[in-house]
Length: 395
Image 1 (cartoon, helix red, strand yellow):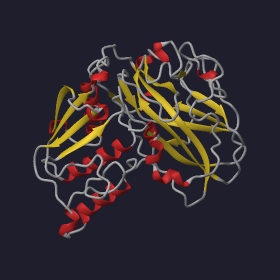
Image 2 (cartoon, one colour; image 1 turned 60 degrees about the vertical axis):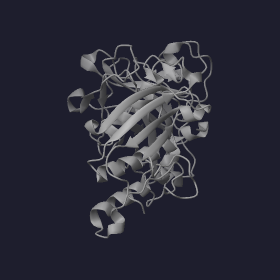
Image 3 (cartoon, rainbow, N blue to C red; image 1 turned 180 degrees about the horizontal axis):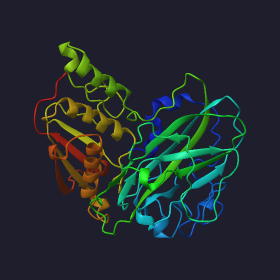
Image 4 (tube, one colour; image 1 turned 45 degrees about the vertical axis):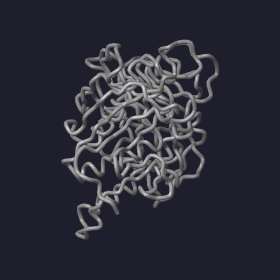
C-alpha cells in the first residue's frame, strides 16, 4: 500500500470541493523550529501554542524520545494522517487526575463578516486512553484566549459534531467539522473540549491487544490535518456521515426502500471504489472463497486509505445480512518479526473498526495466524476476512 494512501482526507469527497486557501497555519505540524525532545512542546510547531498551563504535545518522526515519536509513542501508535508529525491533547481527565489541554493558533488572515467557513480537524483516540468522550470542538474568536492555570476552558465552541459523537475510534483518523458564519475580524482558533465534565458522555475503552503499558485515566486524542476554508452557501461541510461511503450509503437505502429484487443484492466495493467484478481486481471479495483481503503497510496495524472503504462496504453488507458471520485472520511477514504480536494487532484493528460501525461482536471470530507463507511481503502483511454463513449475492 502506497504511503499516499495515508491521506484519509481523500475519503471525504464533500470536502474536496473546497479549493480555497486554508487559513490554518502549519495545519499538519510540518514546520518545527528545532528538535522536539520532550512532551508538551507544541509551541515548537509555530504558531501553535498551548493557551493554558497544561501543554499540548507535539509528536514527530525525527526524535530520540520514544514518548513523542511517530508512529510509536507513550500513548500508543498512530501514523500521521499526512506528513510525518501530529499533535495531541487531553480532552478529559478522570476526577481531575489529568488536566485538559488545548491548541491555539492565529489564522493567516482575519475572517470576513457574513462569509461562511468550513472548519475541520481530525482526531484519533490514543491506544492507552481509558476513556473516550464527546464534545471535541473548535472555538473561533477575535482575540486570543488564555488562562494562567490548568482549568478547563469553558467557552461555547462553535464547531462540534452534529451528532455529539463519542470519539472512541483508534487506529483511524475521524473528522470533526462544521460551518462557521463570521461576524468579522475573527483570527484565532482554539481546539479542545470546552464542555463541563457533568455534561460529557463518556465511555470506557478496553486496552487493545498487543499493548502492555497501563491505561491512562483520561481521554487523550491525537490531532492532525486542520483546515478552515471559505465556502459558499450551498457547499457542504458535514463529516458526520461515514467517510468515503457515498456509494455504500446509496446501496443501503435501496435495501430498505426499493422492492425490486435487484436492489437487495449486495455489492462490495474494492479499494479503488469500483464494483467487484470490474476490470480492477485488487482487494476484492473472492466469489469462490468469500474472502476479503485487507492490506497493511509494513510493520503497521493502522487501517488507512482504501482499506476503510472496503471495510465500510463490508459493514453495509453485514447489516443487510445480519446472520452472516465473519472470520478475521491476521498475518505478518518474516521481515516484521520484531513487532510483537503484529498479527493480533492487525486483527484487533479490523475487529474494533467493524464493531464501531454497529456490527455485533459475537458475529466476528478472530484468529492470529502468525507468519504468512508468501515470498511477497505485501501479501503477508494482511488480514483475511472470510464469510462463514450465507452466500454473497451477485449483481
